[in-house]
Length: 398
Image (cartoon, rainbow, N blue to C red; front, side):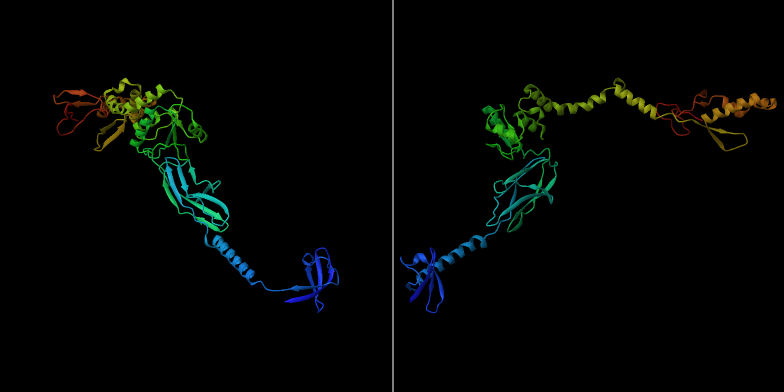
């Protein structure tokens, strides 16, 4: 198709063309032939390029498919939480690298017993964490929550129980500089107590760094991570005790002779505990100050109760029970009456009677031989009315 147009105005970048119907068309001046000025007539051939249209259409569809596959099919995956190691007071957790697909990461948070424990720093690179300060032999639940621009994704809850003091399976040792024989013995001891195998490098789940000399790259890293650096004797002490032993006496640089002496005492401790009851039974309570003090306390607690005496008044069949303290008070009153009362009353009181004779005379008991023997009636006097006498005592009749 050929079209004739009249040039109306020409600028440096744009030309105004006029059709036969006097319609204005803006046209790039760089596409016009050289020497064109206002009033010139130009012929323009116009045609449709179908091949180029098809190529552009194909390019557009491929771009749409690429965008759909990249942003429309895949979505972030929920985290998968696992336990790497557990000890008496700590737990080491790990998970797979975070899969975000096309979403943007916002944060990754760890929850303990349905309460927020803290956010994971650099979640795209860190895939493990250690939780310390836990209680002994206690069950905990953990789960991760991943928040992205495409939504929130939570992992399954993981239940972990901390170990007892007698459970040595959580010990994870990284060896340092030590003799070859000590390293072999260390490996054998770890197998006997059921602990983890030796590690080649210090990691987040390393519980102890064992060595005899403080040098090397692993030793420096253990100090940076605040991992206890102990001697091999610590592991031997754990095996002998059958439980986790404190590391204070086994730090690198501690007195080796005192350390070995402590191990010998731990080995002989069960025998001392067996002989201890025998020594306590053979010793006399009076030979030890503690036994004497205990005996004095027992005597002070068990005071002698007041003695009860049964008397029968003349003209009355009912026995009268009086305590020694009451008798003392009555004697005092009688003395006062004797001093200040009438003479007749004093003579009557001075007259002997069965009642007064019983009070003044000491209590007597009659033995089988017929001889009256005065004896005080106290809580320690054995008195029997009937029956056979007890062995070692004479029968006493009232």
